[in-house]
Amino acid sequence: MNITTADRPIDSIRNITFQGIGGSVVQLNYPNLYEVPVYKTVGNMLVLKNETEILTAIKVYLQNKVTEYNNALTTQMNNKTTYYQTHPDAFNFLAQIDPTATPNRNYNLLPSDFLIQQLVTNLDTLANNYGNKYVYGDTIPTTADGKLALIAKLLYYQNSSRPERKLTTTVSSDIAEIQNSFNINKKISDTANIYLQSKHNEGAFVSPTYNQTGYEVAYINSDGFDLIDNTQAPAFIDQLNAIKTQKTEQANIANKILQQVGKDEDATAMDTECGVDTNGSALLFDISKGTSPWMDAMKCWADNIFKIKISVNFKNAQ
Image (tube, rainbow, N blue to C red; front, side, top):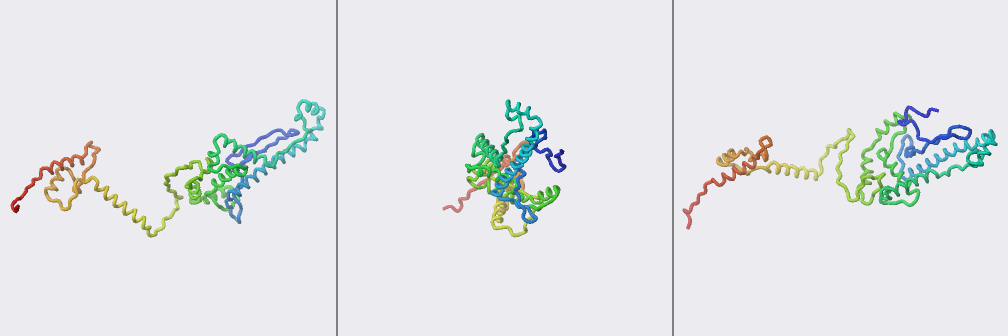
């Protein structure tokens, strides 16, 4: 039987096979948690279930998978009498050495919660190897449902950017709808709710980069179709722009040698001699020449200051 299809990215389903009673091949496909139905149908829409509903869906999915296994095993069990009658003496002889070598024996089917308990056991193993806090976060569960809730949270978080989408009937239209229904704002909201709360660590699966001490966060996101509302800016934006303008003006005059209004001819000549431009500034460092025009101008300016003649008139002194 060819179980491959043209639409599956991985066309070989992971499974275990063995020879059944009478020589037939038995195939048991492994459970795949990504097959758990995390959406519910509402009209012509698929709406994301909440975490509690997803937890229930996980348990139902695993129980149905056990039923699938037991149905295949029951079919084999029903063949035991017919197959035993083909060589009863041989089977009886083999049974003296190994009771499982004969089909004429009792079989035990899997309990309905077999896979649920296996999943819980796997989570316990992870917790034992890496620590409860690493796996579960700040809230350590003590019940099976509490531990399975971690898987439900993970499936919810992975699909939270698509809280609802249209119901489709083909693979191509379903892929297109998944792309079109992506809601970046919902994803940001859920992420912020997890990460920007104290004592809200959800464990390495749901919040792998959670930081107990806080964050410095900055992000820009766009899907290419964002619009800017042309409305009057809030007052605090105007204040920020005014501060920015003031800081820019201060930066522009930071390397000026001397601020004067209405310089006389001697001061203008001094600027020219010292290499100061008409705005009263000079380069801090000239990379091409390896010099500092600003430092040279300061030295020149200081030298000229001390050359200024000072006269004192005591004519009117008493």
